[in-house]
Length: 189
Image (cartoon, rainbow, N blue to C red; front, side):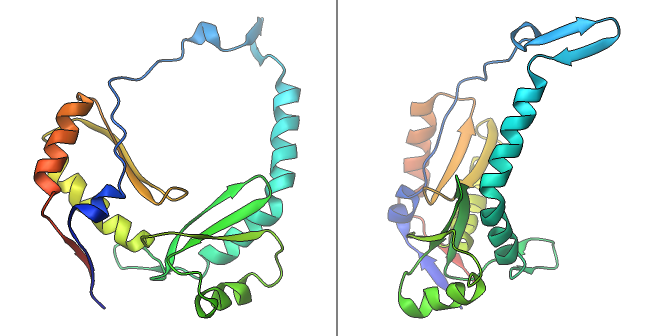
């Protein structure tokens, strides 16, 4: 099945985060106590308790996501194969948000069957599938790599956008992006 994502409108969905540097964390900023040869992180018990409480809150959502991810296929190259209507998922608190390109009942019914034993699911509308975003992300990376210093790139599923972080000036990269992709279309097979 061939899908076309046309021109700059699709790329307008992609957000580019340009950074000019990273703020390092200095060892002196980490709360520690040193006793003999033992390094003790201050308030370690509180940190562990907070982690365990958050894990308990997210347990059902994590299990629901595990059930969802088991339905994904795997390509020969190891890449995940997502359903065409799937745009990603994320956990906030105790809720698993599942983004879909259509919230029509015939689409959500498939997911309702999968999630029938979970009460933590919320469906979110998304313009682009995760497959579409990955095609665009890879094409943009192939074009930008070597021209600008890309420090990270990823798909931000909760906003249905692509993020590129670069070490170059924001205006320069945005201008290049507009010139390069204003008339380009992408297709996924």
